[in-house]
Image 1 (cartoon, one colour):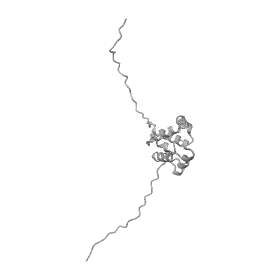
Image 2 (cartoon, rainbow, N blue to C red):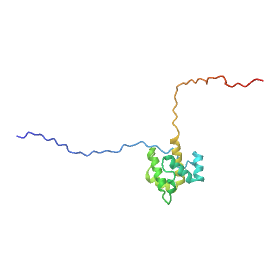
Image 3 (cartoon, rainbow, N blue to C red):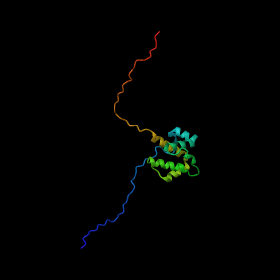
Image 4 (tube, rainbow, N blue to C red):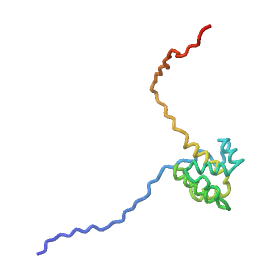
Length: 147
């Protein structure tokens, strides 16, 4: 007699839903140009300079934005969606496409402000008291002669 027991496990469907990430809004609105006048002025007077600097600060090639052109700005669109992805900022690719097409100057100013915000050092307040000793005063090695 054959007394073998066969156990068969049927493959089941494993559903893995993507985890919902908390998303943050942009640190400034697209039309908040007066929030940082330095960025606003650079964008107004020399937009290619702002574009290249922003691209470089994000870690992309310095000259990449100079390839941007036409009705739809692919470099602007790509960089904006990459910034959103890196800093977990809410938005959609469709929205990015619309704003980069119609408000490209404002988009570059907003991206520059966002990168500047994320570059600022995090300030943590501690309640620890520090005592600083004054520098010791050493006698001068060269004393002027008195008359």
